[in-house]
Length: 379
Image (cartoon, rainbow, N blue to C red; front, side):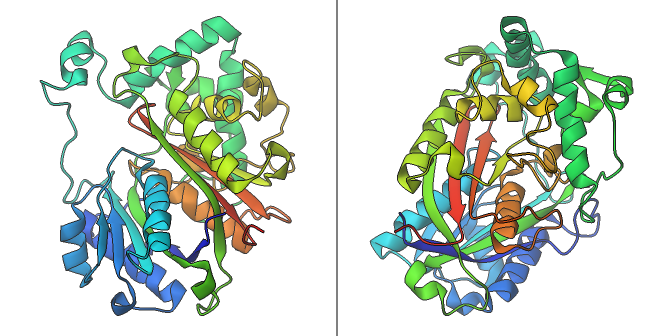
């Protein structure tokens, strides 16, 4: 029970390829759209959080005068972590209304800096010299171990992409909407074994923003509030070789477990699930680390249609990072879809969504954030 709600949520006006806008402009576009959704302007915001840019730069650009600022940057799940920190700040009285923004020119690279590991960093010293550089080569190490230990087949891995394209097919904003088969996945080019192109995230431009306030103030905003029931965060290691286990994410288990305990929910209470899917194996890890599937069973669970349209656990209903959108730090888009499903506004709306769980990853299993959202506040 947190007593905080999301009262504004929006993505950038365009998603996909936006060569005429810088990253800073994408932050602003998303922020203005979220303010319009909440019916407020910059004067109504006294807390601000972002990642990718220094919060001081974005706040200045937006004309904000915040009393509370958070620049936590732990990769793609930074925005889930921002939600958690904003909840704490609002409940502590440090601010009343928090804006969280994201903007990223992942495809067009307008105003974007590089992300090569520093030579003195752990990755620069102990992984880059051996050819483990960037997400495709980093993520292959754990998934190959998982496949060996638990018998996950290439067909099961490919089905993650197939199922998420089924959701994207229903979403006019999705970047890739054409239905695909397992054969289509196998016929796409190999990027880094075992990942084919269609098992890797998109590379796009876009952004999003959220506005949070105390639940007892939420009734003053134009849209029905989306209540935050629980949150969690954790970190594990910035380098894959030092994971506690290559077949499970400790950060997933800690962040997800804390969020569910704080929310006071069980697995059967969850109507809708978002699991960060930069690559096809991540929903498999997420389903198991959250406890929705036993170890080694998530691949078959997905093949059986449980996460697909009409399934009993609708997952990544916007199409995910594999088909909807992935500008680099995908967590904001997963949160946006969670909010839409709770509001009943999603393109591929699931019936009767009352509780949604949103799990993010950052830095190749290095960090995780989890948020549980609901139509009603906790009692």
